[in-house]
Each structure stands twice: as structure tokens, then as C-alpha cells.
Length: 549
Image 1 (cartoon, helix red, strand yellow):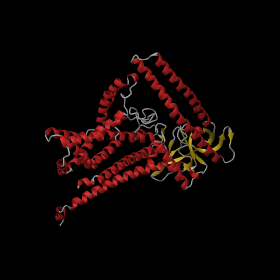
Image 2 (tube, rainbow, N blue to C red):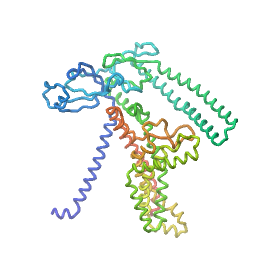
Image 3 (cartoon, rainbow, N blue to C red):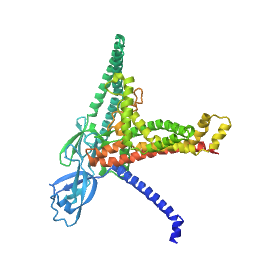
Image 4 (tube, rainbow, N blue to C red):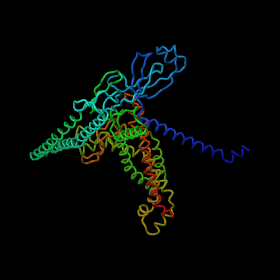
């Protein structure tokens, strides 16, 4: 009976189905774990006040409970802690984020449950998110507006003053990166223009006067904007708040360094929910701070999407043309077979090898040649002879090229030969048949190859570390300065951001939730890109379905 059951093939069907189910559950479980650990980071946790005494001197600790774990009693006793009065084999210890980085040795510390004599969550405890030195925890003592202490409704006034300081800082940053940055960019272009005239022996007196006039106009405009910038910064520094910290000391915080303030122990569910989405929005739209351990990841999101789209624009025509030649025009001989085998084997080359190739060929050879031919005035500073987003896109285009070629060839091979013969019999040329019949029918397969290429390119990090990605990019590849798209600039990438925050951060405990949040964001970006490509593929499939009949 069992023998017949095995011979029927049913066990293999069940085993295959089970393996697929386990794989799906594993992937979904992993995504759920990343999502939970990453997204829960933005929920406003309660701030606890702990009174400690025992293995440590009597003291007060204020902060957020970041983690907790059970440890063996013997392990703690091995460190010299006396636990003779504790009768259990294990005890709990809490990881507390105490913040106030400039006043304590570490902004994270472990606390043994045996040392906690009391635990409270006072409603008056405030959390200050700052642009430098991380969060600050404490009790609001005084709110000082333009040198005067606010006596009535000081908390409501504090919210207004923080909003005012954030708005002024935002205006100053926009001015600095926008109009002032544009003037600096134009001054640099004038300098290079003058140097180019010198190299060509074309720097006449008229051109010197013309350049001087342009510089004078830009500097006059710069002086006006500089005064506006200083006025905004001075206005933002007007107000302060004094806070009593866990040492009992009163500390003055200038409000121009405060980005947000909230009282998590006094917040209801809907207030916490609103605060959660605000923090989530900041994470997606803000620039990183504090060596990437604070702030948002917008430059990394932009860099990832921009580089992947650029790669898709490069790899699609090359892959499709190569596949059409191999399938439609190349002779069926040993050389063609070897080329196909080589293309397939290219997909198995380690990605770091592509990075080394991109650095040597694209950056040093091709980029260096472009600099010598078109940008001699920039020497010795390289323009294209240094890692940049265009070289990253080209490197990943070569890395993903086999995927597009193989997928397109499979699509072409599924089109019946009778379709080609029918078109040719009606008088169409081979080129017309390809352009009007074959390529539209193969377009869903082309999109499938592009989807696979995008999925792989978005997750690659190793080659990008050699050809363009950096920890902190000062500017985006896209801005308001001519020629608006700067393919020579370095960029940030979500995958590299995860590596940098997780393994290069000086503050591992603070960085851990950001690693999960960024990983979930990277998966979301890849899924969004793939859904877009799948939507286009399905649209093309429906559009050209009539050609198949």
C-alpha cells in the first residue's frame, strides 16, 4: 500500500508543497520580525524614573526601557556583585536609554532588578529630541522667552517656541542649501571658466572684466543673503528652557537645538498614535544626523531609487538588443552557444568582482579619460574620474545584464515561428516584423527580466562601496543647479546605510532599531519598484494579447 503510494508520486507533491509553505512562512516571519522591531521604534515609550541602591550607589536613573533579558545569577556574581540574598537562579536586567549624552558616560546602561528600590512614571517627565547629542530627559523647570521667564501655561508656550525655532532653522537651512548654495555653485563655475580660458590662451581683458563683473554681482547678492541667514540664526537662538535632569542638576537647553518635545507618560493612545506617524514621517523625509544614528534616511531613499532607475534605463536597451541579436540574427553554431554559456555564467560572478571592474574600467579609465578630454580645467580635482552615481548604475547594469538577456531570449523563443512567417509573407521586412510584432509580444518577458534586475540591483551593496556610495553625501544627484542632474556625484544607499549604522556606528545600542527600520524600508522600496514593474508588465500583456491569436 505504502509502496504504491510512493509510486503514485503523491509524497513528492506533498513534500514540494511543504517546502514551499515553509519557505513562505520563513520569509513572511522574517519580514514581520523586521517590521515589528523597526516600526515599533517610533512608538513613544514611557519614561521611567528608577531609584537604585545595592550593587551601585544610591542614585536616580531616568530613561526609556530599551530591552530586558534574563541572566544567570552566577554570571552576575562573577563580576563581583553580591547576590547572597537573592534565591533565584536567574535575574532580570533592563537596558535603559538615559540620553543626556554630554552629562553621562554612556547614554545606555544596564540595571539589575535587584538594585531597583522604586519605579515610577511621572507625567511631568519630558523628552527633548535635539539636533546634537541625542535625546534629553528631565523635568521642565522654566521656559525662557527672549530673556523673560514664562509663568502662565509654560508647557503650551514651550510647544509654540519649539515650533518657532524649528521653523526658523528650516528657513535658514533652505536659504543655505538653496540660494546661497546656488551662488557658491555659480562662483565655482566662473572659476573653472576662467581656468579654461587660461588653458586655451583665450583669457582676454574683456573676459577678465566680464568674469569680475559676474563675481561682483554674485558676491553682492551673497552679502544680502548672508545677512538674512545670520538674522534667522540669531532669531532662532532667542529662547531657552531649563530642565532638571536625573542628577538633580538644572540644565539650560537652547531651543534652536531642540527639534521636538513630548511628555510620553501624559499622552493618551491617540496622542501617541499621532506622535508615532509624525516620527515615522520624519524618518522618511529628514536628513541623517549624529553619524547616521539619528534623524532620517531621505538621501538614502532618493539615492537608491535614482540609481536603480538609472540602471534600468541603461540595462534594458542593451539587454534587449543583445537578446534579439542572439536569437534572431546570430548563426546557430558553437560560437553562439559559447556566448550564451558565458552570459549565463556571468550571473554567477561575485558582485564584488563587478565592483573592482567598475572601479578600474569605468572610474579610472573611462572617467579619467573624460576628465582629460572635457574637464581639464578641473584638474587635479576629478569630475568623472572618481566614484559617482553614473558608474554605480553602469556597474550594476553589467551585473544584471545576463538576467535581462536570458529573460528576453526566453520570451522570444515562446513566440511561434508561424507569426514571423506570416508577417514576412504579407510583405513586411524582418526589421518591421521585429519592431511591430515580435518585440511587443516579448515585452512581458522583457519586463520580467527588468523586475528581476531591479530586485537584485536594489539589494546590492558590495560593488557600490567601490564605485559611488558614501556614508554622508553633502548633496543629492538632483538639484536646481544647471545641468540639474549631476551624474558625477556620490550618493547614499539604503543597503550601505544598514551596513554603516549596524557595523560602523559608535553607538551600537542606539543604532540597532534604525537597522531594522532601514532594512524594512529597503524591502518596501524594492517591493514598490517591483509592483510598479509588474503593473507595467501586466498592462503590456493585456495590450498585446490580441497579437498572440
